[in-house]
Image 1 (cartoon, rainbow, N blue to C red):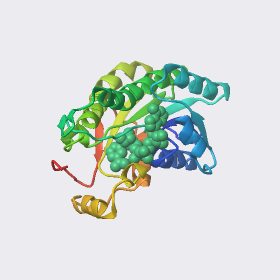
Image 2: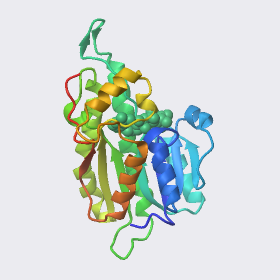
Image 3: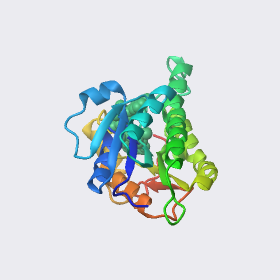
Length: 253
Ligand SMILES: NC(=O)c1ccc[n+]([C@@H]2O[C@H](COP(=O)([O-])OP(=O)(O)OC[C@H]3O[C@@H](n4cnc5c(N)ncnc54)[C@H](O)[C@@H]3O)[C@@H](O)[C@H]2O)c1
């Protein structure tokens, strides 16, 4: 599909992978609408040309519908939706203070899995309204899992479950949306150097980098964004979860 001239929705666009993706898509000529929580939108610095941020919680049907209506009102043709919004609190199933808090588990599933599903279904509806290209293609949804979907570490039970859900939706979502000419691809990043990782000290970050097979460093947000543009431009990629992890296989801790 052509990125230039299309409109793209990127969730979690105020930070990390979403911000890098919004910038990369805009640099390739897309009109980018970034969604993020209102406090993150308010705190965002200057945006690259071609990127606009809209405040919406991905878990809220009305807020996502409103954002899509604003894109439509601009006369922009939505072709691409990239789900980057996510949270990653850690807790064990059974810890020193007792069993895993059920509300915390719910909250992680709500943002990472339900939020991704909510945006995917409403963006697909918007994309399906536009004409198909000469190959019958209308657009693409890229979701973000994590290698924790496959080898979650100690303390990642809620996160791993949510990301396994995102990976698990991929083939069935591609099948559901095939009749509309919409592809669905999931990226499972390893460890990317974003604000989500900034909470760790230098020694932990160095240890994480050393655990990567090659290249022995954290991935850069721009490398995730580059993968999104590669997927967009590769019409035969569909229904697959692609690891972007430098061959890292997570250990238990
Ligand atoms: N950084 C990594 O190493 C890594 C690895 C694997 C997967 N991921 C996944 O990639 C995605 C992006 O991560 P990141 O590292 O850029 O994180 P980040 O914390 O830098 O950015 C996440 C963004 O999502 C937004 N967000 C959170 N909840 C939201 C909601 N309910 N509605 C709208 N926006 C919301 C946040 O405000 C933030 O701007 C996440 O899904 C994360 O789980 C990250």
